[in-house]
Structure formats: C-alpha cells, structure tokens
Length: 612
Image (tube, rainbow, N blue to C red; front, side):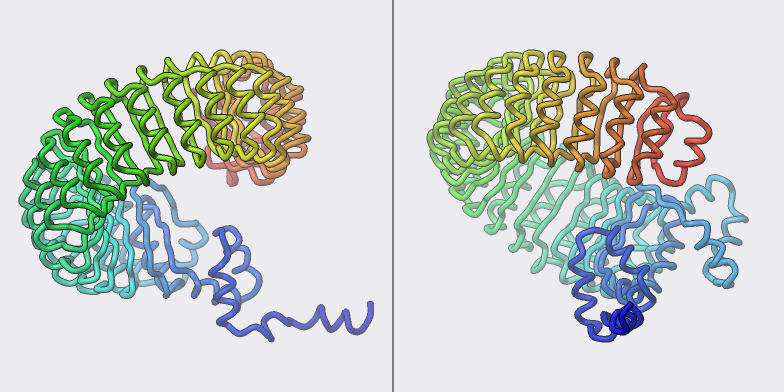
C-alpha cells in the first residue's frame, strides 16, 4: 500500500473540508428515511447534523406518545411538521426505555409512578396522546407550523389552548376524530393568526360557536377548510366563513346539517374558491348555480351522493366556471348527458373527469367531452352501464394527452373501445380495468402494440384476457405495476413474456390464476430483479420450487402474499424469509411457519403470521 493511500484512508476529508451548511443541505436532499438513518450512523458529527436537518416527525399515538414527544424534542430541535396518528402503532424500543430509567429521567419516573397507580382502563388511555403530551409538544416545539392529530380522542380543549399560546406560527392543523370543544378552537382563532389549513372531520364536540370564532380570528389567512360528520356545525358557521374568510380556496363539506344558505354564503363571499367538495344531501341546484355565478376561479368540483341535484346546477357550472379542470360526479342519480354536455361546452380546460354510479349519464355526454375537452389526461368511469364503445371512440379521437384510464363494471365497453384508446392515446401510462367482461385479448393487444409508455396495468377479473394479450404487453418495457388477479385464462406463457420484456416490474398480482406454475416464477426471478411486491395467493400449481427460484435473484423483494397455495410448505416460507434480505411482510397461513422461521424473522417482518 502506497503512503498516499494510507494517508487517504486515515484522514477524514469529508468532515475536514465540508462545512456544516453543505452537509445539512445534502441531508435535506436525501429522499428516504432509511438513507438518512444510515447516514446518521457514520459518525457523531453526522448524527448531530442529521438530527438538525430533520423537519418532520411521525408518531404513533399507541405506545406512550407523551413520552415519545418528550424524548424526541431534545434530539430534533428544528421540527416544523408533526403527524400523530392513533391508527399507527409504534412502541418505544426497549433499549431506549432502559436507558431512560438508568439516567433517572424525572419525566419518565413521574410517568411510571403515575401509571402504576392508575386503574387498568385508565392505563389504556395513557397509551394515547393526552393533553399532557400536547402541552409538552407546545413547549418543546414553539416553531411548529404543521400539526396532525388523527383520532387522538384523549386530546381536549385544554391541550389546544396550550398549543395556541405556544405555537403561534401554526399554519396547518388537522383534528380528524379529536373530541375537542369550542374553547380550544376559539383559542386557535385568537392566537394562530397564520393558520391556513384546518381539518375538522369527525370532530363531534364542536359547534358553530367554535368555528365562528375561528373564522373571525383567522379571517385573513384561512385558505383550506374541511368539515365532515360534525352534527352541531350548521349554515351559521359557513355564513361566518363567507363573511370573514375572503382568501378561502378549498372547502370540503360532508354533512346533513348544511343547506343552501351556507354554500350560498361561501360562494358569494369567497371569490378565490378553487376547490369545492360537497356531500350534503340538503344542498340543491340553487347553491350550485351560485357557485357557477360567483366562483369564476373554481378549478376542482366534487359532488357526492346528491339526491336533489339535477342538470340545471351542472349547466350553471359549465356556463360560469370556465377554469374547471377536475370534476368528480359520484352517485348523482338525476344528472344526465345534458349536464355533462354543458361541462364539455363550457369547461375546455378539463383535465380530470370521474363519473361514478351516475346511471343516467350515457355515451352522448362523454362523446361531447371527447370532442371538446382535448386536454383531458385522466378519465375514470365506474359502474356506468349506459356508456358504450362510441364514447371511448370519441375520447380516443379527441383526447391525445390521456395518460390514465379507469374502467370498473362498465358492461357496455368492449375491445373496440380499448382499441380506439390505444390508437389515439399513445401516451397512456396507466390503465385499470375491473370486471369489464367484454374486454378481451384484442383490446389489450392493441394497448401493448401502441402504448409503449405504459407503466401501470390492472386487469382484475377480466375473464376474456389471456396469454396472448400479455405477450403483447411484454413489449411495454416501462411497465412497473401489473395486476391480473382473477384473469383465469392467463398462465405461464403470459407471465413469462412479461418477465422477459419488463425488467423494471416492481409490483405483480397474479392471485387466483389456476394455470400459473413454477416456470413463471422462475422467469420472474431471472427477468425482474426490481420486484418488490408480489401476490400469488390462491395459485394452486405454485410450489416451493417456484418460490425458491423467485427469491434467488429478487433481492429487493419486500412483500409476498402466499395464502392458500397448497403446494407451498413451511420449507418454501423459510426459503422466502432467509433468501430476501429486505423482506418486511409475508402473508401466509400460520401453520406453515416453523418455529425456526419465527425466531429468524420475528424482529424483521411486520406481519409474518396471520390466522385465516
């Protein structure tokens, strides 16, 4: 070894030459938590700088989140965003717990003593975020800008008051599922004058009193508001929003207590409104007419489960909202081709359209979209029995920029429609078809021949699609996601063609394919080294042999579902676990997992054993 090589190995050039500002900027540009964690283990300096670069924390509200907040606050001082979700389960590592006990942390001692004296039911509550935890959060993170408290039912107005006093820079607050009262929300309105986003979904303890005070306090900053399943919030709150919040851009409402007056007030008082989502059965055409008249900046409109909404309201949107780009119509039973035709005539900038369960909308309305909305990039048709091939023929002719198409239970759409899409929309990147029984090999072969940029293909329970179609799809070398679950005519030949032609494939679902065997899995192992997730459940011809060939070369495999595969035994599961260093989840019958496999993989895999 030369003297120069020895010097290079012994000297830490990176830490010597790079100032802290550059190292911090590098850490900020890392795209995954795993990579950041790995960098923090290089040396003490990197550990310290990586902690300084962290701006976001995600904490499960199960497993003593109050203690987590106290522990993390001393390690990550520059946090701007915190997500706490009751649905996530994240426990404190045992080493951390032992270390804190030995160090004599007063907080931990107090918490432990307090918990030991509590009844069992109250001990359960201690494993959820409490007002004490929220007060600690407020004290330790005064520069906090974004906070999500998802289903944190133990948080009350007391915690919110502390938050409002200490975190006055708060810009976004999500209280979904929190049983907070009006006092807490009013305090936020008085102190957090920069609040821009507020989500109040399933906040059953709130009433008009709290929301009105918040609207008055955050009148200049509030831009996004979501209200759902809040029985005590009525039109009075929306009237206040319309009167004070002139900068409101996004409003999402899901309530039986909201009527025309509330939506009318917002439409007239919030001229900058860009996004409106409504699931309010007591709102009628009059409200939508006001939206079309006053909200000329509207870009996205979603209407769900309207029982009293007709073409008259949709025609008003088409006449007034010329900037509309995104339209969702779900279960709007009284809408017809006339309303959709008005959207086509008036909203030339439309890029996204979803029609779901609107049984009176047929081919004529969608044909108008195809002729007029040439910028359409995504189309979703769900449970549209009256829309046929002619509609998609016009889409194929007029919408050359279409990139995503979703079809679910559209019984009148067949191969001719898919061929029109394939020939006219060659930029198609995503195609999802489910239970469209008239779609077969001809249409999917046309996709493979013409849409070379296809990256995501799902053909669930399309009985007429077989190996011939997948041989053509094998020409789409950009394919990354493939789901052919329930396509009974597909066997080894089709999957082998995909394995040989699509090296970037990362997700594959071949469940319920009775003709699929070990040969296909062997080819997947050879041709798809980037494969991360595979679902092979209910494939009765697959055995341990095929599984061993798959894992031999798929070193990146993270998830495998292998339920109800009678040819796969405990030996195959052991091979899967030992042969995939990155495996995180295996879904399998419990009796197929040996004690040795449990010991080897227990600390690595999240859901190894599932009783079925």
